[in-house]
Image 1 (tube, rainbow, N blue to C red):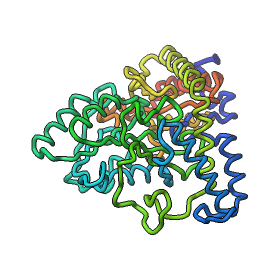
Image 2 (image 1 turned 90 degrees about the horizontal axis):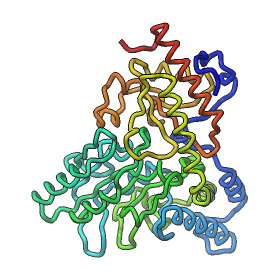
Image 3 (image 1 turned 60 degrees about the vertical axis):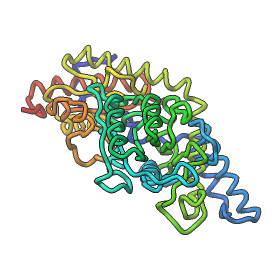
Length: 407
């Protein structure tokens, strides 16, 4: 461990970039790059019946099987999209039926810590959307979920709710009680959509074991390319009557348009690699994350691990220090060669109050300085030590100078 009192701008790490923002996007896996380059050389359209078309179709089918295997699904249930946001938008629709002759969904419940693409409610009207609170630890309040669903069915006995809960939160890393939620949702006659964008490839994410009816995935979170994702339907009886993109029969008629072959090939290769390495990568990342947290708490008393009381993704920590401003910390850490985040990457460019931390009841003054550090399989102890050094120097310097410390 280097001297923790060193000013981060004077450290040797200011000359070496260290990437600790894997929850925003993961570096492209070599397997994904190779698959994409090979796919770019193929000329056929996967909808064509000639040999060239069949060759490309085989690439899509191979990727579909790999993505399905990552989450324990059937290949025919995987619908490729442009990313997790589109997958969420496709899933959150009243036009979701659970079998021939069944009625569409009429209510939507989302947790208060969902990604913005779920929080927006998809294609449900505003008056049909309700929220479910979370505990102080950052986990969905299961008792509150049961109460919300009971109130809906008491008001409308034939109600057909859709509930959307993420598998793991992108800011805190807190893993949600999906199996317990699924049992409650199904008992109320509802369907459960799970946004597994952050969890797939990092922890075991089996759609059947979790009890999810639909699951959203994103390629670039697990080492695939940006611009590729999937909505996974857990049962063949599920049907979406109002696809976002119409006009073609691609993706079972749920996503019209010629498939992005290179991106899909990269997604499939990344999914296969993630599944292969999951058992080894998870413990490795958790060990390094835990070491980072222990050192930060030891060397900078007052630093808090937000969400640390709950089960979390093995690679994620959300840190805050009383009085520290996130915007100041981000700039200082970036100058020190460290890429971290103040929260969700889709909020980059502006440091606003975190809706997730507000839902957890975190003191706004403390939440204003929250910094997310997310590791990957290639993150080294030298990298995490560099963060500890920089964080310690930052807190000491800003405390000494009174710059960047909130009043």
